[in-house]
Structures are given as structure tokens and as C-alpha cells.
Image 1 (cartoon, one colour):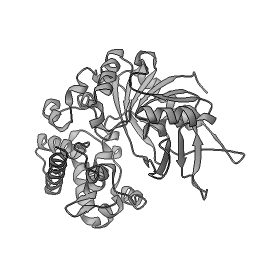
Image 2: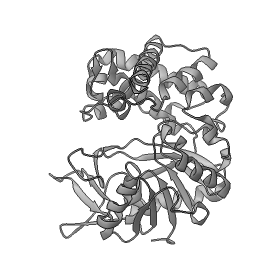
Image 3: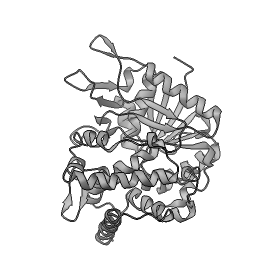
Length: 356
């Protein structure tokens, strides 16, 4: 085990998955979340349930029983300058909330390296990619000014491939993982910060968990890549699956969205892959459709975006709109995507009228 590091994670729901993996590796993790959630985590710990190959039941990880430490607090509870790494694990619209936005401003000023677990890549990360008009992409964000203070060199992107959710019948400190794939991060501009990220990668890989008297290896690793395009592999999955959970009739599961018409899903998936290649990605940066389609068989619930819209959300992450804009810059167009963006625009507008 290497030096004990301090990591600040904004978002205790999805963020607790990476948080407990880092605590298992011996590090100190602070989660930024709502007061009630923080009080529950500090009292009872963060609990993550992971399916492990060869075991009939998920393995339950309690943060209070790990070599490292997990604690939680509100946005004003922590000073970012004291950390070795910060992680963004909230949904993109959440960063405009006044208290979170204030923390983001301090975080940007601290110059601490920042790893994003968002589906929606932060604007400063887009600035690291060649040939993208970042200013034209600003309209795709709930509040683009949140990102104005961040230096692109200090921010990198990690594809949030593992699928997890808070079970509605469980306390708010429980996270259930349904697809235990890996976090795939691009390197930082700085070699120093990339070396530190690779150290976290090795330590998570080496960590073992005590389960029923056995020291076992747990899934969900952190993988660090030199290519800036590896995290963009998630875009094809989101457009072919997550956003297609939204239909005129209501919402459907990711499995239904993908396998209801496999040929249509493949067509839109491969179109997004071609867009990534046009930006500069290599084929090996992308995930083959067949592999994604197999994984989608286990995704029996609607996506978070679809559930949020059905529940009346007035803002969601708009990766669909961002991909459409970047495609426009490359003179590429997909009618399926255009219809998807229009439908989601319509749903959001209806929710806003209802909320007014």
C-alpha cells in the first residue's frame, strides 16, 4: 500500500462506489452530499453491494470496516486545497446549485487535479480535444459558467461505465451495483498528476477484501489510458441505450431500448463511434457494439435520465444535445439523434410548464 492520500468526491451516491474502492486501498475519502445523507453515512457508513463472479449473493462493503476512511458532509464542510485529488460524481445540473457552485469556484482556484465521473464531459475537458468549438457547446450545459474557472490541464474525464443505483426500499447510504465494469480514465496533461492517478489504479488493483474469511478480489477497477478519447466510448452507449429509454409512450429499460430493435441500436451506436473517430479517436479506444449489447442484457431498469424525466425533472444531463452539436461541427447528422433531442426537449419543456 502506498502513501495515504486524501480524496474529495462531490456526490455520495455514484461517488461512493469509487470512494469505497479508494478506502479499501487505504485512502481517506470525503463525500460531499446533502445533510441528511451525510449524517447517515457518518453514523452507519457507506454501503456498496457488488456482484462478484462465482458468488451467489452480492458482496456487501461497509466503509467503516475498511483500511481507509470515508466520511461525508455538505458543500461547505471541506476545503479543496487540502486534497490530493478531487472527483466530480454529481449529475451535471447539480453543479449550478448555489452551495455546490460556491464549492466549485474554490475547487477551481485550488488547482487540485480533478477527475470527472460525469457522463457529460466538463467543458474544460472538451478544450483538451482537437477541433471542437467549445464555445458552441456551451448551450448544451445547464449552466456553462460553472466551468469557467477550471484549467483544462487540471481536469480529466473518466467514463462512468459501472452501473449502480440507490435501491428505493433501502436507506440512503446503500448503493447497489448492477454492472461491475471498470472506470476508464484519460491521463492528465501533467505527468505528475498522471503518475498519481496511475498509483490509485495500482492500489485499487492490489486491494483485497475480507469476505467470509477469504481475501477476495473485487470488480470495478480504475484504468488509466493515454488516449483522451477512451472515456468518449460511453457516448455511443448513452445515445444507443440510455437516452432511447425515453419514448413518446413513456420510459423503458435500457435492455428494451437496445434489444427491442437491435439493428436500429447498432446503427445509431456505430454512427456515434464514427463521430468519435472523426474527432481523432482510434478504433481500439471504442467498445464494440456486440460487447455493449451483451452488457445491456443485464440493464433491466430505465436510465437515470429517463427516470428523472418521468419524475418531472426540469433539467437533465444533455449528452444527446452535446453529441448532436459536435456532430454538426463535423458535418455529420443522425436522424434518430435529432428526433431524440427533440423529444427530450419536449419532455423537459412540459415538465417546466407543470412546475411553473
